[in-house]
Image (cartoon, rainbow, N blue to C red; front, top):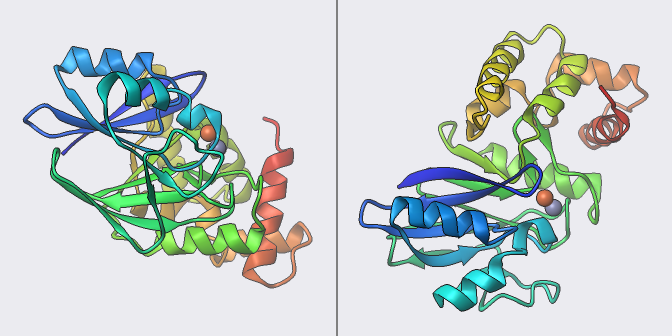
Length: 254
Ligand code: ZN
Ligand code: FE
C-alpha cells in the first residue's frame, strides 16, 4: 500500500492510501479539491472515505466525494457526522476489497469523545489524537481518557507509520525540547523536521518507535519528563503528569 499525505486547508493532511491497481481510499478529507487533484494526478479511483472524528477540518470534503464518486463513508457513530454511510466502532475490523485492506477500529476518546483511529496495513490513521511530538487538545474528554487512548496506541508495533491529521511537528517539538532538553533522539528528530520543512516536505508519517523516543506525551513515566512535571506542580501520578503537560502545551507560545 502506498501512503501519501495530501496537504489541505491551513495545516491539515488528508491521507491517501492506494494499491498498484489504481484503487484508493482517503482518510479525513477536510476538503474535496486537493483529493480530486491527487487522485487525477496519479490516475486513481476513489473507493472509500474513512473519518476519525467530527471536526469540520476532517470531514468537510466528504459529502462531495461521497456524492461525486459514489463511495461509502465510514465514521464513528456520532450524529455530528451526518455524511456517514457506514458506522464503525471499537473492536471491529473494517475490511475493504479494493484496495484490499483490513483496519482495526480503536476508540480513542480525549480530543473528542467519539474519536476513533484505524490501524492496519502498517499504518495508524490517528486524526487529532496523536501528533508527531505532540497530542490532540482536550476538547471533550478528560486527561485520564486521552492518556489511556494514547497508551493503547503506544503498544502497537514500533514500525507502525503514524499518519496524523496536522503538520504540527515543529511547533510541538519546540515545546517537547523545553520538557526534555537533553533528549538526543528528540534533537535528532528536530534536525530532520527542520530539513524536511525547509524543503517544503511533510514531517510525517513518523514511526511509533520515534514517537516513543521523542514525544513527551508518550513519555510521562520517563525520568526527565516526570521530573519536569513535578517541577511544574504535578503529583506523582501519570494522569497528573499528563494533565500538567497538556495544559503547559496549551499555554506555550514559542
Ligand atoms: Zn480535531
Ligand atoms: Fe484537526
